[in-house]
Image (cartoon, rainbow, N blue to C red; front, top):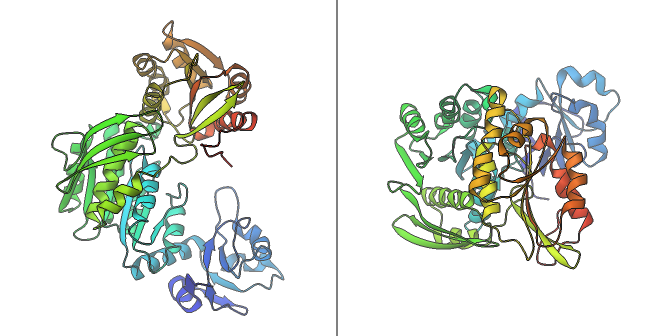
Length: 477
């Protein structure tokens, strides 16, 4: 068994007190008693809803070789005889361990933030840099006050490239995480109206995202979207943070890493980009101009990190969208097929427009329709009615004539569309699920998009359960 941490190193990093017969080390780290693997340590973090200490015995039964627990919770663990590392605060111990992992690592570290595209860009980096050496990256969207230290603490010592996603809902959340990650390259994908209910303006969002620059290592690189209207705010913030190397990506003629041309296809796309003095032609397995823009950021970051661009480029050509983030399914229906684009993981005005553009560029089958299945965008605060209603314009410009929408916030869009499209409205995801299953027909292409909590992923799951996926597509688990 390969050890992630030896017990002496673990004790030194966490300042913990060993109790019981300790193993030689641990193979991994988990905060979920249900999915813990053999040889892993269970960190009993107290969250907003549950306390990990309540599941310590289950974690041990499921294979944990070590429990990291709080001193104050020790009496409540009763007769549990598992080896333990007792600390003052479990989350702080995990944070300390993450910092120790960063200290011992010689990896080139890339951090990604932004209003849209963080996880997609992170996954593209993971996939493409794997062609250049061992990569360690965030799981799913582990980008908050526990996800970042957990990802750091899990980073093997032999990692060549570390890729970290850093998110926020409020100001002052990115700063401590960035200082923990200490990236060599910090990417800001774009600034858009995400979590707008917690901010007064896009400028405030940009300022909060710019906290990532404070964590850059000396001589590190900031990589900014030159096409975004908030670029001047970000550039000024980077320079104010003492960043000497500020780089840009995008289609703007002045961008250092430039998207020269993008051609959309039915299942993929081709982009041409100027990277490090070379013009690269890259077929992309994942369609969408927003994907191409993220790919240019990935190529720029890989160049700045010293990776082999040829290897990165070839790896990008095999990249496929993640579940819930634009993954496509071709489903058998009544002797024909329909195309389902699952973009149901999250939504804000910018990503909604990207999904609409993706639908616009997708060709339906004979007799089929282009259908936008849209649920509420959440955390929009006082701006909610406005940003939902404003989706009517991009839908009309894209020529989308069938708009199926659900949720209380989508009432504003329903009222704004008027006669420009055929609208079906339902109160919630469950109502939409029932309607969609009966209304789809061969040739249709659907994009399903909403904030995660609006639960429009139910629509996707229902379609995948009812209709068989063709052999050339991957069925969701």
